[in-house]
Image 1 (tube, rainbow, N blue to C red):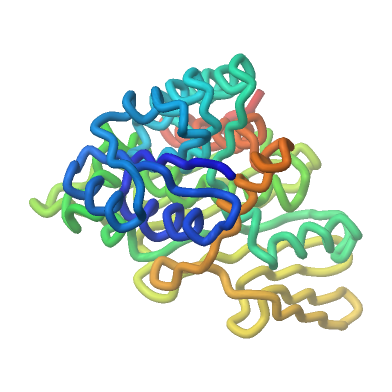
Image 2: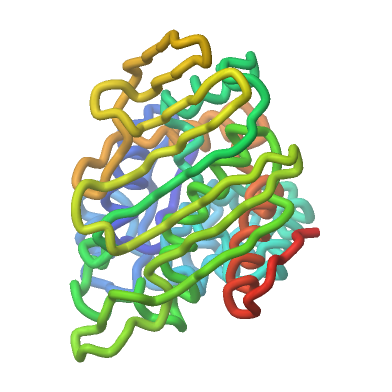
Length: 344
């Protein structure tokens, strides 16, 4: 039985982490901390847990085995490193951190303290993505030539629990990055997961086009991202992330191979559609992708707890996600410089 502490009690914690921990029989939510003391106390009373007055108080408690870090982006590294230093296992929300150096420091802290560090790249756990990876490995569409992976919706305004306007997602100091870190990191990690090939080169536009603060000024982070990725395998494709898709949410990936095309979450009835070169079509009805308005069980919490209970490696390590973060940071550099960036 794992005793879990929740650090940061905003929307992502309340929609995903808290209910999924609460529904897992192998763990117990033992404590909460949020800068909003009233919120901390309210959740503690609701779930029969302890309300901590500070992060340090929670991390000093030997009863806490592991924590979920659900704070703003700019504090992910600091909180995670402190927790690992206090011998707590950590599930940290994406994006992993604000720089490559911070990501590497988190990885080193996990190694030095012999604790597990998992990053919340939950798209790896959908039934269709798991099946798609299996099919691609079996050559369902042949060698991959190109791809396009997209994640876009109308924006994160409803995901700020305190205010719909001027929320922390739009604050460059707290968020650091916009759509590329909120949505683009998911699809960057996913394309590497599906293809088993890392991004080695990017040419990108990371821009602010549409979103405005309540006073009418442009937000401090990007709201649209278009990247051309080259994979280690030689495949080339696009990754698009947007906060200005003012219609149906798009969370699709299409893989173009030498013997067919695989469409994932692009058909309203089937989660995977394979169109073969010979004219055959194969369809799989496995699940529906999560949307902002329809949150379903992510699977990431259960996977984290299972690894702790069985003393096995977490399925999404900091080392794995570092490759995706390098692609994100390189894309920002590419956009600023107007050049194609090779990734070490």
